[in-house]
Length: 502
Ligand code: NAP
Image 1 (cartoon, rainbow, N blue to C red):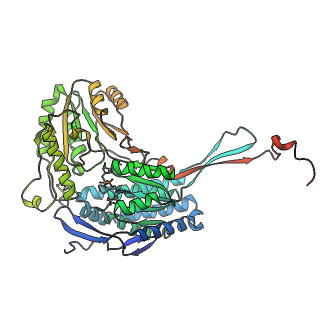
Image 2: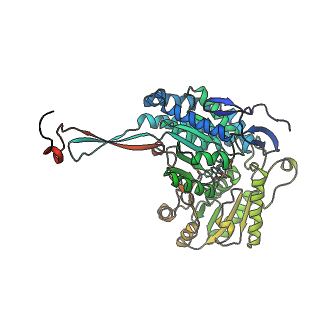
Image 3: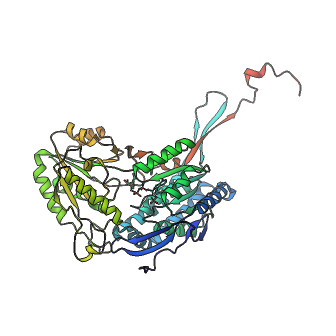
């Protein structure tokens, strides 16, 4: 197959600061808009991973990195941020080809990745340790130090943003990082490595190791030299990583799946709510952990609201990722579209009605790519599998509710707990409902808004720990407590037995 685009990174991995061909299994990256080939990449072998770990350990222990002052390390992170911003168009192009996302979205993700490096440079420079209240003649200090070698394992849906959210705080904290991107989207992480290398970061502190989760990921998780795994991906893989981490007593951060509820009360501004609900589920073609995939609408407005929502959904522009008018781009892979289509079939078997969509669009560009029409299903209860399991595609399930208590109960009746959207003009009600819903993030009259300064993460099956925010740096450090004696006297407990003389 011919490679369709000469901007794709070469078939080389970044192992311990060196570019070289991988010795592991082949990975094929395709452009989901037409299935043309981006790159066949030789992934990392066990030997590549072991070498990267050795070099990471050595580079992290090296005094040139360990003894850098916070502002010196921050300078390196600022250079990476600038490198990403300067290359934002190139990064966006590679990521759109790798994932099928619109160029508009991937450009925004690239700029947000630059912002993440800038933010953690600033957090690093302003982070303080604490002198704690002493209960005796000593100074007591609570200090933080790097963990050592950290593994970052990322999913395919927003790779540059996920990579930055792990690599930036982990490097800022003084660690070495081994980054394993998803096999469906390996290319943009290699471009990040090129930018990091140009920043002058000492060699060995970052390796980028595409390769299968079962080989590369598993080896990283189990290796004794890896002191933390920061994982973003599906709940089942995350659970397996947590089990292995327990054997090593290793800390993990787990950013996992979701089945988030959006609740529309009758008093909501309906235009604002419809636009927010559409954005919440259909942007990124629904391939988003925080997709608002369960919509609960107060019965008094249910018919009117759903009719308008369905009409608006039909007007969304489904199209090529490079077309600026496109709102809903292709899905990442044929296997993933099959899984989305399977869920719609399961929904129909469960008694759901398709209000719009429900199939791949046909004709024109659609026949060449991996498209799926924005889909709304109704007519099932919250017990249905399509209401309980993450579909990770452009599929929304709509249900009516009668009162606040029912809305809260249905929102909480799910294994996941990532996010919740509430649409109402009554802010006291928003506060009540948002307080009662078990979720890591609550949006009121908006959805899918983020700030690197605001912590993000889930509860229940949606994960463990938080990324972003000032504490995002601490997640990659271990705490050490220090006691400095100031009494200059022997301990009274043993003073009586010291005797005299030298
Ligand atoms: P996934 O299948 O869990 O894979 C995620 C990463 O883990 C990939 O790099 C994968 O490698 C690797 N992996 C697979 N098996 C592994 C193992 N045994 N040991 C170590 N690593 C392993 O998830 P995905 O399909 O890429 O991404 C979609 C999921 O991510 C959804 O559930 C979504 O909700 C979640 N997500 C969560 C957030 C959040 O912040 N909460 C954000 C984005 C996405 P391979 O690609 O080689 O299999």
